[in-house]
Length: 352
Ligand code: GLY
Image 1: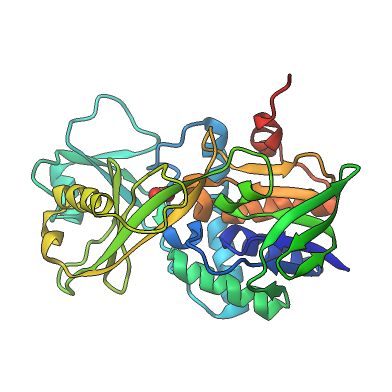
Image 2: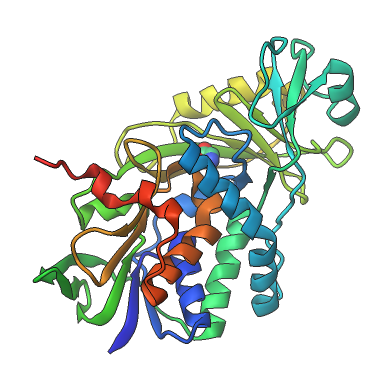
């Protein structure tokens, strides 16, 4: 019997599986067929300071994970020899008004200072908050590296294996019923993102994000990530400029829409006008696993051998290293990080 089965092969599921395997645990990952998972939908911003994180505990969890990033990507590189485009190069949040208060550790740049770094932003922008602590990772490269690391370490990955139900008895998971038959392990980890709701009665719902990429000309690369109001521009070193993302409660609507893409382009051109003539390379979408308080769900619900690691909403890429660490510590040593208290699944269970 397996030690652990991980349900879900996005960044969160893979990161946990790798961490467990490195500790000598035998792990199987179950991957449904290719879906528009959150890991592919993201732009890979590592932005706890620039994003408006709605609670202190979530901010602390995000910050904690940001601090783990350098060693985590180095570990992945040691295993796979792959670079994942991790760039702790700061994020700029442009503003159309002069600031009246400070902003979450940001440094205010007036127009002149901003222009030294990003001369192409619209003239209507009066200055910007500069968040030197934030950065980006290429989420597609990251997902590929995690997959390779899992394979190289000997994690078993079962493709096209959908979990149909989780069978529990006496507060213990007995087995999973899957599309390829029943499966057992000593412990189970549910990391199925927006799809977890099909398996467990918790308020995780898909929040669609539409995105697109344009190609920047070689002589005019945007230097930094730009984080605007309802829009972000993430320049990759190969010249792709990722533009994201809509935030839509439309269920699993598996397509781009003219209005979604139009909204993104309007906002993006309003901030950075020269991109209006850049060739469009790609449009796509994905589903963030949203929760009512925008925090992830980490820890046990009823079953003693089932851990939940889901509902990371806008911060899945950022939270992957810390999620892998706290879930492993909890599973292997029973060590509960104090930060976990705030993210228990029990907060969504009514007491009546
Ligand atoms: N973290 C950015 C987004 O989810 O759109």
